[in-house]
Amino acid sequence: MRHSALAWFGGVVGAAAATVAAGLLEARAFRVVHHQLTLPGGASAGRLRILHISDLHYVRGQTAKARFIKSLAGLDPDIVIATGDLLADDAGFDEFFDLLAPLLKLPGAFVFGSNDYFGPTPVNPAYYLQPRTGDVHPKGPVLAWRRVRDALVDAGWADLNNARSRIDAAGLALELRGTGDAHIGMDDYAAGAKRAESQDLASPPDLLLGVTHAPYRRVLDAMVADGVPLMLAGHTHGGQICLPGRAIVSNCDLPPSMAKGVHQYRPAGDGRPASWLHVTAGVGSSPTFPLRTFCRPEACLLDVTVAAS
Image 1 (cartoon, rainbow, N blue to C red):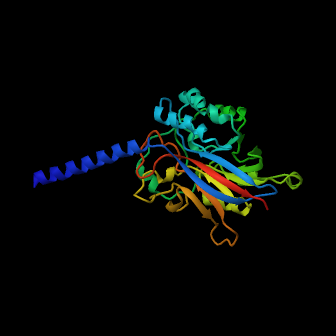
Image 2: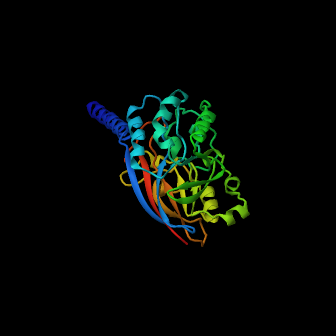
Image 3: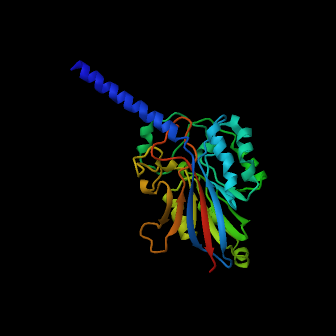
């Protein structure tokens, strides 16, 4: 009996070790995911290639991730949208921006997530199974986020944290409306969407985009009500620790089935047409929990056809 118990325990330990090893390997199995969409636009029609990156959680010395990030400029995007949790280590600043340099030559925009402001801390994995309302209070060390923000802005990228911006890309006039991180209660979509009506009437954009880090319903609902046809978000890591074919959690108030990919999103009980929502599974994972199962890390290229109204 004792030998059977020891054999059972040894089998459990072996299975757990194999799962961790597989999760560590999968966290380095980077890929590019392509999506195609047709969206209603303004006066001009055209095509737009959006590179959507998120949740890089970059730490100095991550050589495999560094090679992947550096390769992304070869996708020839028209614009880069970064939806937060970019640099998890102040010591990696110079290395990170050397990797980003080719992408920073392109039009771009960004919002921040909680891990742009606060460094990672060890977390019990069971924590992620709890319901999310967007009132988390990070306890990690404060990072030099202003330095990151200033470097991105100095390179020409638009800061969309509770802000809006006009960007020309691929011959199209884009308007981007963004929020701060709803996961830590920093979102204020009304501030980002506020606009001078006379200016917008004089030069309406060809396409509206909504940009946020954590895809909480209150943010998405506000964007849909504002007529935004495509919303981009990260944060979920695609569920990160998944079962074959499905996520278990989303780490926000979306259902796990929407933890990654392209979905039509409509506020509950709202009869208006749905907007498209793209949630990327992200490039990285928290340095304190660097595992993925059945959820490869990704950057996403969205080939968008903009139809003139």
